[in-house]
Length: 151
Image (tube, one colour):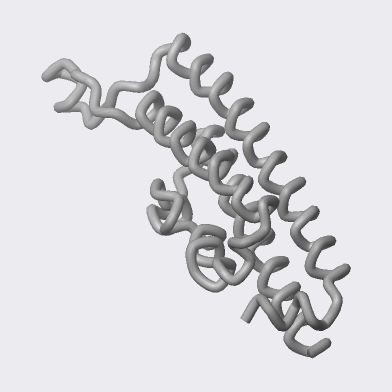
């Protein structure tokens, strides 16, 4: 039993790491550093954390703390889509600029909006991490019978 519990906690911690890595990549992107498309999946079911949450993590779905993670996780991805749109949507560029290989950059107002949205994204991330810590504490404190009922 202890081995299965350690394994579940290990997978939860891996999911937390995947989440932190995703947020770090989003922050890098905000700074104008390009990242690979697979480093920042836009959909909440495609990110590393989402794979766990909507996959193996479902064993914990009967616990409110687990279910409470979905709303901030969805909000985080929605906010990221807004940031992505502000920073990377197609903009009209003059023929001369295109000939020189220049592309239109986000305006200062768009950059400021993206920074404000990133603050929202960060707040959602902190909520997720707090809930994941609560979830880990719950798993650690489960007696063998409650743990066995997960599976």
